[in-house]
Length: 247
Image (cartoon, helix red, strand yellow):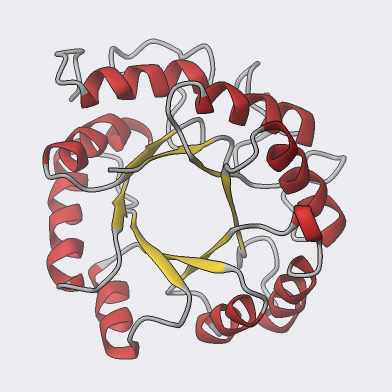
């Protein structure tokens, strides 16, 4: 069962003193969580101003730094509509990422509700990059089932966007039912107040999950975490069955 590290997300650089933004600090955190058994990280590359970017230079620097720090670590990045609304430019970026050598992402996250998502997936597959398909709602799940899995799909990421714990778990179950039985793993995670309850739910139902500063800044006891490694350590305790205050 996969425990992925989601190291920074779209949070502003001042959201937490230990939030990794630059390639150096993302690589540092990737190395730290790898010591806790994490073999896959999802990161949001930034430009020098700290803003999210799809620019190949910055994406390549970030991915290459992590690959150098943790050989064999799977590194995923988002082809995010909120960063680049123009689907053609998103496709151009993905095609460029495929030519970055050690800076080429192993996996690209594509949300099923984004415009031209199928074409973005096709571009990634043509460059030998695998796919994580983001499914936020039951409608997204139905869309995916109707379209079928694009070639190169490695996993589906089910991510209910509501933060109330009970509602998020209920929505998680609705999304999973709507997905049906697709022939790839599903990774389930929540956000903010729902992050730990959904992680616990995923672990109890033997579904892949993730943890990191993208999803929450707090440990399951409600205290501010010291870093991504701290969050992963707590997740491993939850996985081991410890009662640590989840939910």
